[in-house]
Image (cartoon, rainbow, N blue to C red; front, side, top):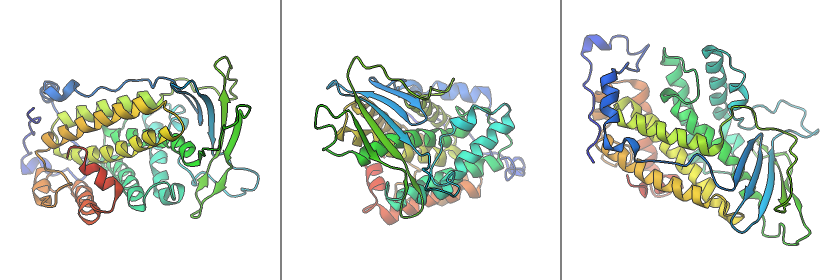
Length: 365
């Protein structure tokens, strides 16, 4: 499968205003050319996860093949003992602000607010991932914010080629709710048939001040109706549909063959691999996410292969990575060069010790 052709570099006179508006306006014929590439429709994710109902606000209904059915609530609402502001102690999903946006400007403010939360990620997710992995996720949000500051194109919705990192981060935030249940699950839970309710954790602060949620799980019989105190917000996407949109958007952007997109796409790849880990590890208490984890793994292998082809192997997971070659392809853009080089430095320094770096090396790159 040949890589998508790279577009020609601009003449020097045409690059004078790159610092203010460094994203290119690509012609329709370029998009048609990208869409004609064989990779255009090779990655497909289902828009639902069988047996899983993602209801929003931390509410889930989960039924696996063993006929075990659970109603879970992951709640970050602080208890009475918390007197200080807690909004910066955990990561909120974007949709809360997204639904209130009535203009592109308001949506951009909502998106900025969502991304700024990741500056405090080391406190919010302390102990959930390796510190280096948390730094990489925070760096992706930093890069997305910097892109917005330099861009004159204001996104009007989350499903946008310019918001692809934010799309992936939303998926990870939602999947982390499942990870919270996994991290607090014990084999002693629901061992007795009469046991139908377990509070696995109460709201508390971790060692770095981040907020750990309250986790409540009910075991349901097949005939039980679930009376939830919250309803799914109108127009809200589920995790499965968000994953599908993120992967399809990433594939479309990759097939455009634009070197300035490669740092964003590499960040998305890293985030989705972390998300895969959240789904895969849930098999300690439910098999409901097994098929979704397998499907995502296949998609990641395909995407890694396409990334290898589409970039001509000019990617950070190489000890002989030539940052000067990449810099010449993006006109020396400092933001792009800095982050692409940062990824290579993480890989070279931690390829043998970082779980994420080791996993990336097995995904086809």
